[in-house]
Image 1 (cartoon, helix red, strand yellow):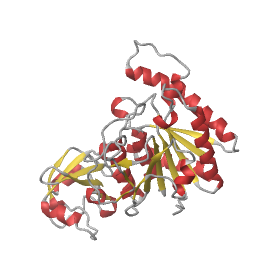
Image 2: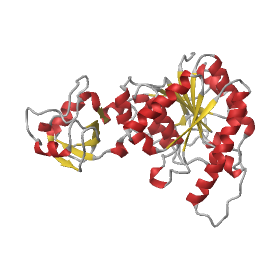
Image 3: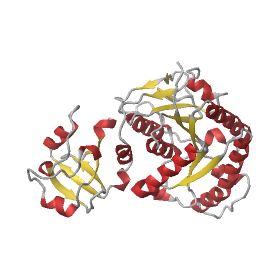
Image 4: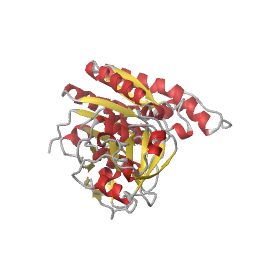
Length: 363
């Protein structure tokens, strides 16, 4: 089976790019660049989400033991990002390819203007045959501003750019039915959109040099696949992993894409942390909204309570009578008007269907 993805996001994890001693694995980086360059020559659009800044910084400077964890990370990332990008620039240059640095924070995805500006920047780079290399701005992003890890960032980029596929290169062949080191564990080759629980078979162990674990990868990959983007998790240490993955020759886990969502819905789907208000809805409204095959907006008649203040255009969170999340939406008007209309019939929808993303779409 040959996969003909046109626009591909490739996320390379810390454990793939780093040696056991925590320093960059230059030979592997070179080999991965060769594979990415080969994809470009085949006419594929490639966006690289790369970890490795902290490891690169570690190869250049020694941080005092007295420095706290946040300061150490900022210092290593600030120095290492320059080294990492210069390494990529030199290696891609050997294939007559130009790369560009795109550093982002979580705030860039919460703000619609920032989001569209980023989208335009990526579009311009791709039109000019330039490979965007994306990483979190670790110098600015600390604690609550940080992405869970670069898997989350890669998922957001894939959604924003309407990618055909997201390829996550880890240090294992994919998702297993148990601990990958246990001989009795089996590789799960495909995960259906209807899969809901991963904790029963995925170990919670985090990677040695990265922040995230396999559970995080699963939830992110599942969400992205629900938006119509195929996701593959494969072993980045495998020889020629990218061409072999795309030709169906290498073991991996594929999250089967469900359906195509609009660009606006893709943004809303990843915006839970940006929600300004909470809308409590009754069971009747929940049933109407989540009935398959029906396009229904959220009307005030189905609202029982509103918590928080919001303006027109803000993200709002919908919860049911049991406090369980139902979905996210874009408010058609502010909380002041919405409160006045609670429970009333014949009123303008608070959230139009086109700007409503339901958890049922990712469950």
